[in-house]
Figure 1 (cartoon, rainbow, N blue to C red):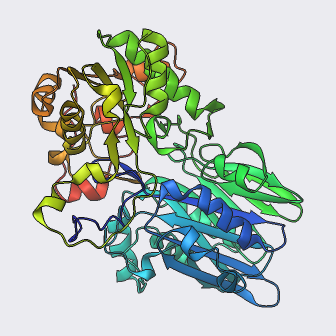
Figure 2 (cartoon, rainbow, N blue to C red):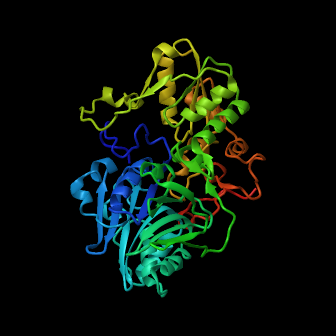
Length: 493
């Protein structure tokens, strides 16, 4: 639902809007340090780009047991309070920041905020999940019929109930048992009284990394969150791997049937922070390589290459370096945009994107401008930015997009509009150019994107190296709940 007030941007990421795909959440856990919750709060702050709707932390202390705090809003507004952090003692803690992709989207109740906690016969456990369970509806129906009582609308709660019904002896074994029933994408950080647990699904769709902090260990969605606490990046958790970390060290095993990994390629394009490392590659360098590839595939005569800040910046630099066309900050982002309370007159409603972005008029006037952005979803923001550039006196506007056309929704942990609301689902590239009313519009090809992320021969159409369903319509895990609701899969070619 759009906000009722034109300045109510509390549900958006800084500089973001409803015309961007949004990652569902970020997860972080620490064991073996004094006041682990403080480390988790810092880690979640670094992962804030992965979820700004709400956050939560669960900790365990030998004297006080499990403690939790869950709040709406930013980490900085909730978990920097000494009063709050004093309620989360102990050497073991996990945390979660979220957007809602399942459950009551945009109307989150506090009961939907993770981590979720369950008390079992062998002790308590908390769990935080990044991803999306594609058979959650059928699992929920089955569990309710067998007597489970759900407290939230989140698909992630299914894991706790499956663990509760498992006949296995230990909590890690129960988690294995539960996750074998789950379909879709999951990176999980969980904790018991003495253990920190990390798991990735067999396809490794969503990221999870292991770090060393002092004498302790940490698990995180991204390496940038290790940097903020001074942790050493050890390695990525492998697809299909479960690690159980105690004061004795890290135990690793692979409880699932091996499959060819299909990591989310959009993590390289947009979701991950540019200072993170994915698959041994700098995200920033990958995005610059995407820009270079885009310049090779879609050259155009122009005077300036300008990013749509901030997500288009590395690709724009790459495009400029490859093409030899000067790079310029033709659009400036307002770093301090937040909620304001001006009366919503029609004039203010029409300000739209100008609240977040402003054109550098002296630079743009009379110039042929290449605008580089990471993606086009609905196209509403792209059109408004184009109008701002032309209003500033640009002679020509050329859009270059650092991802292929987004024509299919994601069901693996990304907040995507319904298919009919995706511009590329109903229009060809030329029709999109006419709709946006720009001089030219080009997207990087799917093969070009694969080359930029390190696959020299491009995409293997018979066995794709990444999950690229949002571009190709080829889903590595059948979205059972969506099909049940009427979603039509791409016809086999």
